[in-house]
Image 1 (cartoon, rainbow, N blue to C red):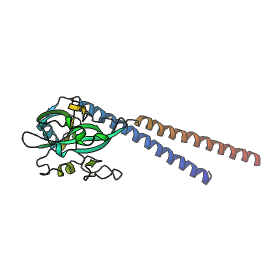
Image 2 (image 1 turned 120 degrees about the horizontal axis):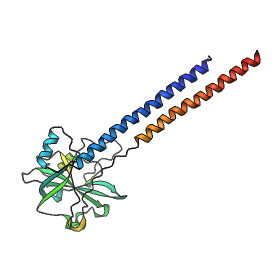
Image 3 (image 1 turned 45 degrees about the vertical axis):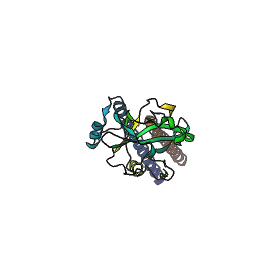
Image 4 (image 1 turned 90 degrees about the horizontal axis):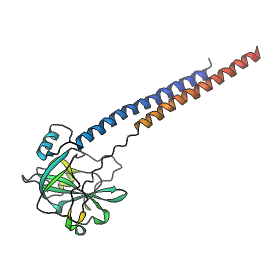
Length: 247
């Protein structure tokens, strides 16, 4: 067997193993994504828990993401933060407002979406509700750090956030948040005077194309075998014909 043929066989084998490995990796990712979606659905469809019970779950290391929770207190609107988002193709902000509970603890609540032109409180003063409020929403864990280097740094001077830094939001309060809860609450779609912020703005979307990706990689692996086999057969036939002609 010629050296070039051996090299070709080796390249085909390496390529087949590599493409197959990518296919099996996507199969594993598919199983992981389906388990994640099932867990989130189970969480969001569970009964709302009292706030202290949810905090105990978090402290115990249990999963609280997207679990319904109830909390009561008074909003501190003067310390609201604005997290930049797009909703249905429209730019705007999620309004994160501190809520002071009856025991003095601070909870940061995502009250919902406002269009970019409605960022200023003076344009939506009707929605700055006062007095004791009871909020039912979803618990959301706070990221420990910026997701990646492509995400801009938060602009605290302009009160615009590009990632949800709980510590930075609390740092803007005179008492630095004090005994603050270590997770957010996304308020549900309860009506608000003036219609803003629009509650129930939690995004729950987990793209799941891993099956298609797996089929693509496995298909490429089989294609490589087919093309490589055809080429090797053609080379073997040409070599055999050459031998017969020289005989």
